[in-house]
Image 1 (cartoon, rainbow, N blue to C red):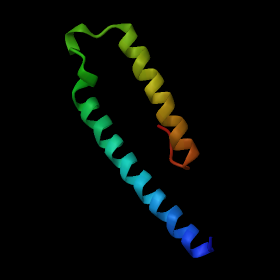
Image 2 (image 1 turned 90 degrees about the vertical axis):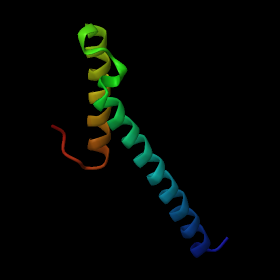
Image 3 (image 1 turned 180 degrees about the vertical axis):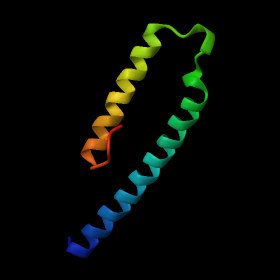
Image 4 (image 1 turned 135 degrees about the horizontal axis):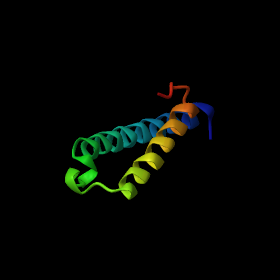
Length: 70
């Protein structure tokens, strides 16, 4: 397999994964806008813990890619 073919294959895979990530980020934004499908009047500490884990995971991802954590 030549280098150009390998690079094009890697680029195709990269672009496909980038598109998948954008779709997942859009879905995550939709969920956040809808309070993650939770009734705001029924929020409990379990929900807070779930969001804490999500926030930590997002911080970890930002750290991997050099983004700033809040």
